[in-house]
Length: 256
Image 1 (cartoon, rainbow, N blue to C red):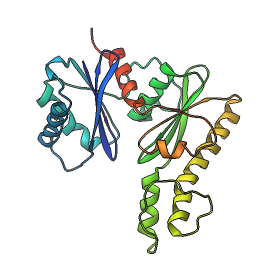
Image 2 (image 1 turned 90 degrees about the horizontal axis):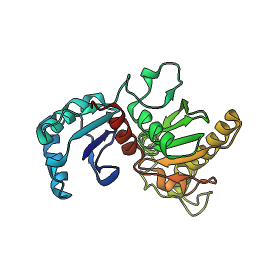
Image 3 (image 1 turned 135 degrees about the horizontal axis):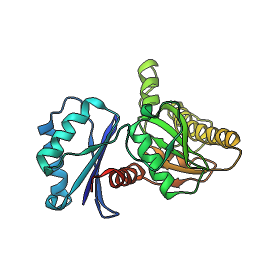
Image 4 (image 1 turned 45 degrees about the vertical axis):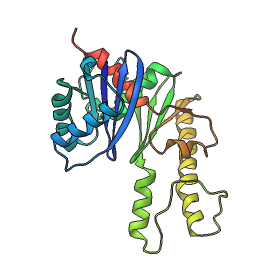
């Protein structure tokens, strides 16, 4: 079995694969102040909750966009399952042509979702990963990862608005019943959710114009469900795309 861990800015997603089947996933909060021992306790709790036989784990891989958290999480993996995890980074075999200016700049999460999308979905495709930072990663018809788009995520945008506008409240992440809000909360929900949906629709239209052909749109990430429900175009929704990418990367790079 394979342990896969994706360290994000807000949450750490933990999954276990039994061959190619994802046995379970769990999330814990990303905390810059936690030690390796504290993350080890979190991992032990997850394995206990899902009745995972850690003796069957024979591999582990970690991707991270939070360098300060990478080391304590890897320490936790070594303490709990007695494995040194593979860390996603430059120089890995991907099976994907990384065609950006400097491939070493490509984030681990963007690499993982691009590898998964290349292996699972028709080309060209674009992965829309809606988390703390929202990203769109594009793989062209020839299987080249040609680049992408990065912009503030839903929660990041809301917190910036609330923290800089004294009279605006923190709201839930639901779409309103109408585009034109009748009160402050409806108006903010419209801008936040429907605005994000319109941004996705518009950016994907522009990408298709640049590529000169239609593409497969794939949505993932914590805020993707509510946003893509309000988009005009059709999406494939894949909550575990980054974990699937990690599984593929591990098997491409493990030593025989």
